Length: 261
Image 1 (tube, rainbow, N blue to C red):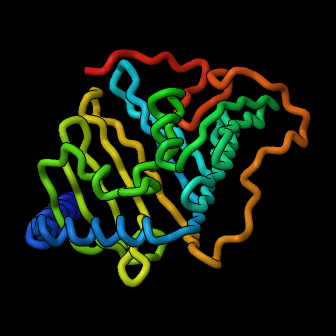
Image 2 (image 1 turned 45 degrees about the horizontal axis):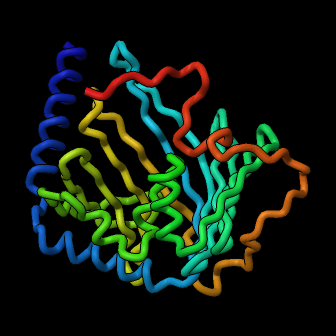
């Protein structure tokens, strides 16, 4: 009898949650666009930005089990052409330096580094990292010179899901659908609309795994400590080819990549 009561109570709670969620969803496309554009404009207006992040990369095995690889890192940037980022996971410890002319990637676990000429802006560097070097920077869309246009590319469905709380910060929760991905973003409410959480689900891979980045300790302007964006080889690291240094989305050696659906 007690078991039956618990089951009915659980079912009632589930129905309440589902009905409540359905009633609270505000599919206000114009409002969602306004919130996202506000975040984009705010980020672009900041000359100096620093934050920390935790990332989760989901992997789907051939027997449909979803595994989550966790990592953390930091990002510091000075517009238009300075950035320094770290990424630490269970199998990679990488630091990236960009001083406006040269990209340096340091593999701390192996004590090796690689360099490439990359004169230009942060946006150009992000494009080179993704297209030319296959080493994308986590959540780099929000660091571009026009995040709104980059994020809205190919979007055909938009939902404003109301409020959510991420790391104790009340956020606007928005959901978007595009041809190859579904993605959600949680944007801090108030005068500093920075991205607190960004989740991307791939629709081209069976199981639709997600890549999730949750940020914390956002600082801008004078809150950002002075940073040296040039690389100094203090550990006498060996210079290698850029492809020999791990990138944030590299997998452990015992993982074998299969085909997308």
